Amino acid sequence: MIDKTPPRAPPSPPPPGPPRPPCVTVTSVGFGASLVRQEPLMSLTPDAPAGRAPARNSVVRADAEA
Image (cartoon, rainbow, N blue to C red; front, side, top):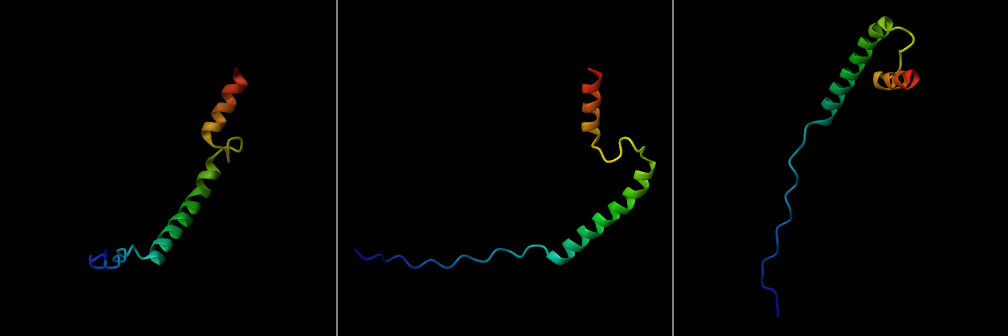
């Protein structure tokens, strides 16, 4: 038996996404700005907890007290 169904049309291309270069630029600028804000905050932080995650630091303290 011969198939008499018409051939299917090729799938349509996906819709265009957001332009990538501006998104990457905005993300990079935002990350750089957060680093600029981090320096003054780190100068206000005491040396002992600097660079540690607060949750990890509190767990270590709780284990030491037990």
